[in-house]
Amino acid sequence: MVRTKDPAVRTLLIERAAHMLRTREPITLRSLVAGTGVSTMAVYTYFGNMDGMWKALRQEGFTRLAARFTTVTTSTDPVRDLTAMVAAYLRNALDHPDLYRVMFDANFELEDLKAADATLEHLVQAAERGRKAGRFRAGTDPLELAIQSWAVVHGLASLVANGPLPRETLAHGVPLLTALFVSVGDDPGRCRLSVENGWKQPSPPAG
Image (tube, one colour):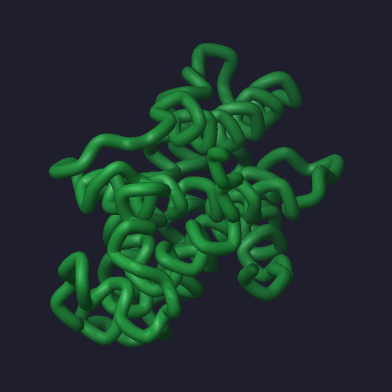
């Protein structure tokens, strides 16, 4: 009789790998399962092999990002909402710096590329709402603006989450995003208020 896989064991191993990354412990098949109460066979059962585990770990970063995006509420201000999405991305990176680093490790494929790509769609939809509302010029490409917004926050996250700069550096997000959104047509004063409001939106604790 084939035993049913226990999702809790899979999660346990992913969390263990993430912890080892954070504490800079060498990750091998044996060290991964040490102290977990499961055998090395569990890695093969749930991931196929160690490469499969790394793929799952990378996917987990995007899964948590997608979950964080769903917590951002929609308001009548699309620029505030786009900024809030960007801020949610940043907070997710700071909450899970170990997973964040693995998310962009192209040495391993993703388990579900479409699901990872879908995270960007949250920003694209917010940018599209901004264009429809007249905050951004009619010719603005929502995808391009979403990518540019992602690039701004990715730079800040990389410098602070796993880099040399202090958290005070995050304050640069407001002027950087304001400059970006003004460059595609938003009113400077109105834009600054929207960005400031979106940037400070509270985010729920990481799951």
